[in-house]
Image 1 (spheres, helix red, strand yellow):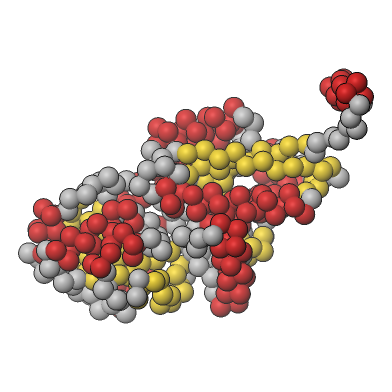
Image 2 (cartoon, one colour; image 1 turned 90 degrees about the horizontal axis):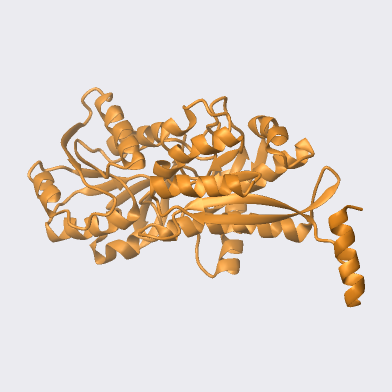
Length: 380
């Protein structure tokens, strides 16, 4: 018996109480923007990770023959790179065994260096910029498709299914928005003249007035407006497109492809006008597992999944499975196992390539009808 436990036992006996030893603690960090304009998306990620923690604790977690209790240390980075690195350092100082997050690419990329230097594995369930996994950090993983896959899929869909010919592009100059927009434009230009970019405009992730850029876009007569950014900006942008009578389809990536977009856009959203892609999704064989997860999420939190809660859930479950297979929550021991693991999750079977990108990333193309997201297709 350790001196610390002997002291607790003596204190319990002195108080006339029966001692109850607490399980050893494993702290796992989670970082997302749980304040600011995309707080609803950040909280969705956190809720998914917390569901996994609660389930594992309820079942009783044993690793290497020892009982453990998981604790989720959740931090808010507000979608700001400086706050993101501060949150990362806080988790390193707290000696977390792993990190789920960050939520967006702009915070995930700078934070990843801090985790790498500390030897702490990190799985982002939603950061899609390719740079994240191309820095040579063996601690960096993601279980969603990256912007190269997402941009290519959106460009293909825009030109083939959407028959787009004249495309206007707006990006919010964040790591996510710029990365996705660059990939989309690259694939449009590689199409050999099937479509052309007739206007390229810029905004920022806190903007509310788009009248100048939308007026410039309207003059080019696009049939499609592509936006690289988040739903908090996309919603007001759709409102102003209606006010300025810009008669075009509106396309974007996972950042705007949430259930909140219809609320943010209000009556400006016309059925089938919006096309967006989620850097994830499930094939038909996994549909029941995803439906079951969404139902469990609603029972637990009283709200619907926004976007990436299932990916955060799977990321945490996969991290813990790697600890169990390694027989230890020590990052140095379970990291090699995590890199080679094949985990059966809600979203399907997850494994990583040599960079830390998910193998065979699936993408889901959506539209909105009656204010609700509707699946158009699932593609790779």
